[in-house]
Each structure stands twice: as structure tokens, then as C-alpha cells.
Length: 132
Image (cartoon, rainbow, N blue to C red):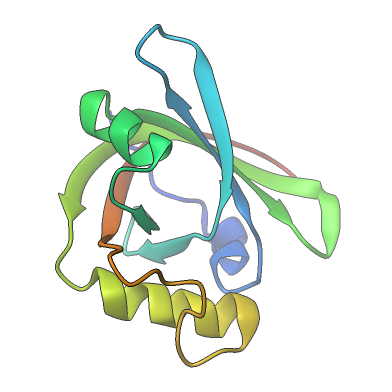
């Protein structure tokens, strides 16, 4: 059962709010990484480079969790548990530049490596909880 992101927490996606993304390692142990996040309709979007640990984990097991904390009030947050429903390289370079504008004020993502392939992951929320 999918769940919609509550309207009163959608503002977190327009702020410079980092998400802590939890994925599962091959042995089932958790792995958590801070990531930039975006929203497209009811899907949460994260972007990373191909072959990083979170990329490998999400390709193998689509179950993820995110905690997005309001940078203006750390006691206000949105937790999302869901599944990666799409993995695509199409549009990923433009998307990371969009995220660099939001999070860094830069027109282009400044940390790109020459051989890096960017990938977007679209996450369908299945359960949300929140505070604040």
C-alpha cells in the first residue's frame, strides 16, 4: 500500500533539508548515508553515482527508509519507508545539477568525477511518520 507524502511536510523538499537514506547491505545490516532529496509527484528522488554502496544496495534490494529533518527545526521531521520503483540514468546529470543549485547555490554539480555515471532512484513511499 503506497502512502502520499503529507502536504504539511512537502515544504521539506524545497528547503536545503538533507535526508538520511537507509539501505540494506547484502548481509541484511543497515547502511545509512546523508543524501540530497527531491520530490516528483508522490515519489521521492535521490541521485548518486553508479557503483557506490547505496547504488549497489538499492539495485539488489529496493526497500529503503529516509528521515528528512527540517534544517530550521530539528524536532520536525518526516520519515518515509518505501521501495525504489525506478532506477534511471536518463535525466540524472540534469537532476544532480538541479540539486547542486538547491543545496550549494551552484549551477553545476562541482564534485563530478570524469568517469562518473549519475543515477536517479525514484522511491514510492509505503509508510510515513512525522513529528512537528
